Image (tube, rainbow, N blue to C red; front, side, top):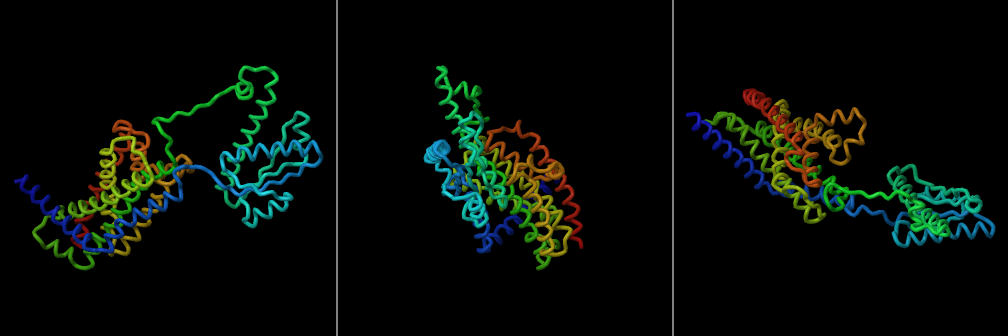
Amino acid sequence: MIDMTAQTILQHSFRIAKKDLTELFRNRLGLVLLIVMPLFMMVMVGFIYPSNGTISNLQVGLVNENSGYNSVFASQSFITGLNQINNQTHMLVITNVNSTAELKDMVQRGQLEGGIVIPSNFSQSILSGEQGTIIIVSDESNPQISATIQAALSGVFNAMGQQLAIHNVLPLNATNPLAVVQPYSIQTQGVVSGHPSYFDFIAPGIMAMTVMMSVMTGLPVAISQEKEIGTMDGMMVAPINRLSILLGKTIAQTARGLIQGCIILALAIGIFGVAIQGSILLVFALLLLGVFSFVGLGIVVTSFTKDQETAQMLMMTLMFPMMFLGGVFFPIQQMPWYMQDISKILPLTYASDALRKVMVLGSGISQISTDLIILIVFGVVMIAIALPVFKRMMTR
């Protein structure tokens, strides 16, 4: 008898899920948005954060304040070395500027993104055996570009200084002049082969975020809208177990979330060349687990609201903090400690982390066991809360 009851509940659940999915596929605009939304998001983010990670064509001004024959000779040697390195890297577009004041004015007008100033005492310092100072003028209104220019120019100047130092130690008959100038050689080695870009970091987070958004925005339509138009009353008076209604809605939203997750995964691999280092089956399992975790939360929120508009507003209120605190766009380690504590209670944090470890680092189940346990426990707790809340909602 118990088996027959369970079989009947499952049959009714799949029928309700089929009804919801049929309505989704009949709604042409909704079906288009189901596909276009992840496509738009991935393409937009993919071109905002190019996968090659290179820096090129930064508009930079150059001011040479040196005077005198020796000074001009030394500063011109510096400028020649700068141009040689820049011709190889194409990192800068250098514009000669007459004075520091004019350089700062051009930065303020937005004509330049930064500048290089060779002070009047630069060559004198070099010729007297002291360090020559180079001034980097940056645009403080754009901290990201400012930091990029400072890092790029510092790297160029360090390379030029290394070349000059090697030239100075050549008369010492050193076997390896570079070893005298730079006694330590640094090599970096990743956990897996290859050179992952920032997009490899962000793609798993977008997958988890899109699954979350798909489920939590679809539930108000699946439940609240049916309450408003009266079809929920029809299901309540039908000879259907109320658990079947909840399971049917859950199955339909799970299918919707998985469809969008698969679209994003295909776009990440096909268009942006994201390489999955781990098991593709584990990636799909994590997407399914992510849907399971968010469905319970969505049902609880929807059950407490009276209409679809309120449910959607409440869903957005919950989703936006998770989008920015769940480690989707920015590493959690860069956040203040109190924000990190908040992120630890968000399911999206663990879904993003698990997907990222599998896709980028090739982790297996044992390496992501903590994330799996937290997502499973969160999903079970939310579903356990959702069952009585949903039943109470249907009796109102």
